[in-house]
Length: 589
Image (cartoon, rainbow, N blue to C red; front, side):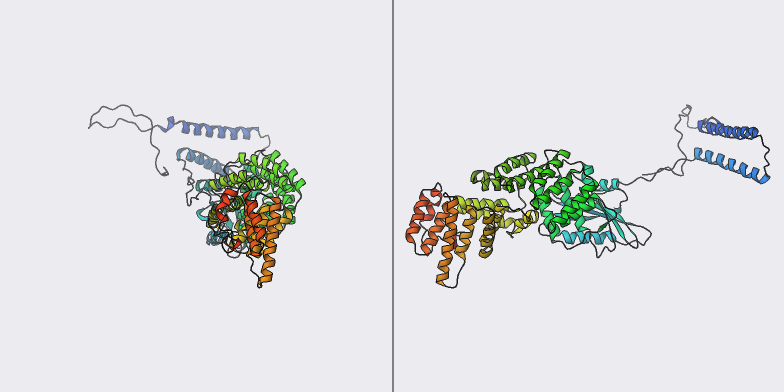
């Protein structure tokens, strides 16, 4: 902005009218300073000052001996004051230097999390490029296969919270890092910025900032990292936003990063929350202690009760977990999706899948665009044997666009169950396209729930993934683990098919292996007599053992199921060497 410093102010008063003659001299008179109101006010003020000094002198009853020097000093002081007053009146006021508007340095794509690292302020030290090393460290550590972080530098120094928020909002940065450094240490503020990307937050921003805004101190920008503080902040934001899958994913990220959480200046809620996030996966008991310390500082923050309810659920303390979940909703909103999902989990782990489904209905009503919520409800329907409802929920999850392959693998498993083998293969291809590692999703969920509670459906999913990769021994072990929690026909299908595919060195041992597969298929059929694929597979292993009568009995039983029409094209191949457990994922009718 241009300023008028050094220029005389323009006279804005209208001049007297002058005849419109080119040769006529100007008749405008110079301004009369004695008529200027500001000068008059200064003169009146001076008179008042002199009068005050005079009367103060007259009222003093004691004789005062004033030296010539003192008199001169007083006169000089008064003269200086008068000169200063007049100068202030006649000198134009200099305009304040305007604060520049923040600039845009990056724009995150949908689904990305932008972290801004501002230029840091040098305090009593030579300037060096500290922020570049911090930015590079964060970029490298967050550049994981399942990470969606983007880290950018901001070229200006930020010195207060308000400015940090303004810069973050114009760049749509969820987190902004700013601070200063001396010769001895670097002090950094990890601060929540723009929340426009978190559309389902029902928690007060003050509660979010208390649980996230973190001041840390490091000594060497090349040897130390603030990455754990960054991820802990995002986990808290995703918790407030009811984005449970992304919160789980970031907990899994934390587990893979080798770094230490920097020291905080003083005990704080945000500091204890960060420690809770770091300890959650590997040391749930210590995480519980961390969140109890946070609650001791503020027992009115609903986020802290959600965190404590979550870790208690992981430790199997379902009753106290539910108490914390209820308190969290009382302090915020009964429409908060994540506590409702935790409530559904508690009902599920307590052996009440029907109640869990009713709770998940509320979760989905709170956010109809969350693929994970449909996936969870679909898995509960699957446990109840309601394949139609489960299939519909997994289809909804796929339509939204999942970031993990759960709904594809579940859909493939249902297709196998229903005899739609071609569909099963298509879903498996889509699952591998989304994530070449079929264990990707289970790692994330096990990081979240891998304590005293477990999802039997997740074991079925995990074992099925191993089966499709030909990891038969692992598939059997995981299926057995799931069967111990809750026997499911699909778990026996997976186990039997893996057993059938295990190759043994002798014919006798191979026949024994086929017998074990037959026993697994039989146990699956005892749980679900309509599971047509199990009849077809048991007929195969009975044929391999020479039990042709048993095989014919299975084929006859298959014809009495509701799925017979779907399996009929495969019956002509149900002979040794054609349709078999070995060709299950490659055979076409």
